[in-house]
Image (tube, rainbow, N blue to C red; front, top):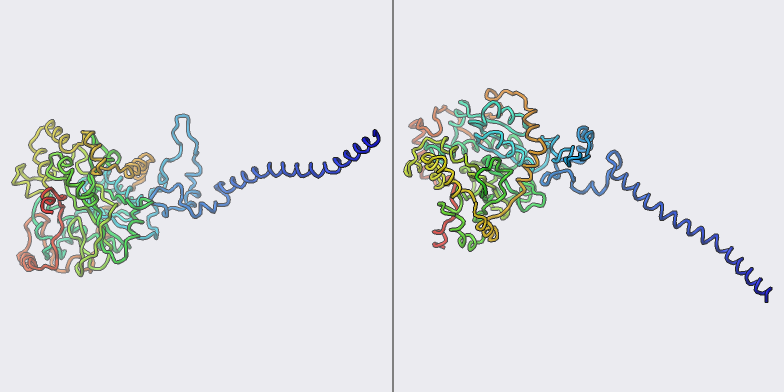
Length: 531
């Protein structure tokens, strides 16, 4: 038994020894594989993320994470990698929690790839007398969302040397001054011989500005076409385009999706609803807006009309018929500051269902006196009708001209500032009011990253008024002035020759040129009663 046991034991031991090396080898290989696999994956990930090494194939086809929404295709990853300034700066965060690197990707590249071949190419034109504190955020916000060309017709503060020097240094910006040469060139415009704008001629204040804007828009069409632009938009410098409805918040993407047979697109406007009386930088501080009638159900609009107006003459303080963008093509002409038209056809027009113009109107208390200081009308109900097209502008002018500072502030708080939080919440729930943060985030990001200060610091002294005609050359386009004698008329002053007056009268019955569309108030309760 002992021998059998010993034999059995010896046999079992021999079996174990024969299988043990194979099992141990398998186990050791498995452990080695499990050890090497995470290490290999970690090395592979390191290689993919290494800036100087192989690019990640996934990132090659995905949006650049450093690119701000709306400019996804305008800046390549390589431009960020190759920037010695960016790569030399530390990405660490200091003990105070403030990043040592720029928080906005365009801090070191505020030219925004001007001159690229991205399409469509968008031109924005404006007539302005504002200062840099308003114009710079306005320009660079629109650069972020896709505009590349800016034609600025400047007067007042905007035409001063300190301001114009900075504006002229920005790639894509052309500054046009209201000089004698410009007025002489615009005096030859065919517009003076047509009827569609005739009812606005030779009137003061807003009417005079409306004519100036139309003449500037006519000239801007030719300049935009020469610059290779596909679309042109006329905006004031207190207006921002809100390209809602695009996943990249991109005006370029929005217009690229417009069908080719569409000549003009209309952006309904939203009006700013300030919640304080001490706003200094509207683009960075205002986030609440009142929606346009076109973007609201009729029952919601008219059902909340009285609460929305808060005792003012209309639903909006100022205009409510939006602004438009036109596809640049033959025979294009302005149709007032809000629309475009064509001499040879009726444009095919569509209206955006989500995108809008954000109008920052009366956002600062000083806006009351600034309008007063620009107009010489008497502060009476009858006389202000000569100067202003909209009822609220007339009321604001009278208050600013007759009331004390304290009375003006009280009136401003009652009519303009939205201090009733309960009403605000109710109208927000109804959809009358809405919160829009994108412009605030973009402008604040630009400001904090030093884009505006970088532009000002890098501005170089350039010749201005003496050379403006180099960028404003006479054209044979049907939208520009006819050749012939230069008239000495000034906009808003009766210096027209008798021959030109006869030509205007001859056009009065010409129905082929519809009248220019002025700033119009939104529908009121009388419209609802008629419906």
